[in-house]
Length: 570
Image 1 (cartoon, rainbow, N blue to C red):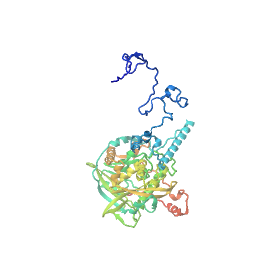
Image 2: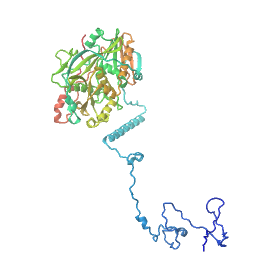
Image 3: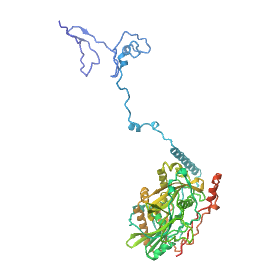
Image 4: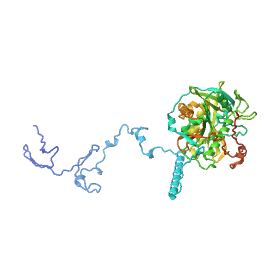
């Protein structure tokens, strides 16, 4: 006997899917009975992640306050029912590998996390920069409020530069050349030839290459050695070469380097140009700024404006010139052995002790019928593999770490590149001029010394912290110097001056604008200029002695190197 399965009546929904909104009473024809579907059947929503247990239990007590208030809903709620224990299978179930997947160490999540989760850097350099920034901000606010309190007072400028020479009303300005035109110039010159070599050189002491800030050496002073800064027309060798018609244009390496690096200059400078017949002479005035070394010229931090301040631009220039002269003589082997050349020093008297220097009179071809002769200097010589190499010796000086932001005594050993980068930023023009002078002189190596004050307020006593050697061509490429552009600037100025009439002219760098001006001046200009010489060190106020051990050093500090300029007689 087969029993049939009664599925019951299924309501039809003509308006869409699913059961209709209301339940109709239908009569089963097969059974002849009436099935009334219950209304308002409760439905408990659930998600796929929920564990399924009992569906409903109407036998439980609903007086539990933790359960829902609606009894019809509570029959489906087993979250607070202790009579429905968790399955033992659920407690014993474990994944094979429950470890979380490893997070990538470097990825988008690591890079874009919040700042508090990134490693914080709290070294001394960052903190020092923050403190300096706060001081600078406070200073600007103080000046701003000061100007607001007195609006009629003249506004204070950050830095005021003066012209290197007083422009007289009778001078006639012929032309002004902006530095922007210099960047497009280019000219290639062949290799120069040596005409005459004069002077004598001492050998370089290689033990100074091992100096570090931990075993620093005191900078000595050489009072008995004379240094010469003779201009072009006062040089007897250049006069002889001019009489022999060896060239058309005559200059010195200091003057040529000033022209070559003119776009990098900030301070004012001037060069005297004399047109005599078909010849051109580039000269400097007595006591010109070309004899000194600029300090922090291209820095954004202004120096004190008071001239008597030890950190003013003029005081630092004089100090840097003395340091450079003493440094160039201290790092030599002073045992009497010298390398002599064809002619002696043309500016020294007989029996006079002179500094170690050699003058190379070199000639470059600028055009088919135009040659340039320049007097170039090298300070030392070194012998490697039985071959002699010429050296130029220059010194960078640190006067106060607060201005540069980098303490040489702490950074020279570990971050020498950062120290050099800071100097390139603050003294771009000076380093470029030294490099161009080494290239003009044909030096095989240029030595840069790092010289610092013993104390920031003591500008008499200094120490050598380190010495680094560079090849001039490689260093020129490192500081972004283009030799073709340098010679292009010289060639353009020479061509411009050759078009002028015979007479005397002066090139003046504008103190506030990046441009150079050409003035026509009387023939007797600059001949009777009064030059204010700095006081000797024995007449200046000496810094206080800190302890007894420095007594001997302070006594030696009285002896100073005096710059001696000898006018050569024709």
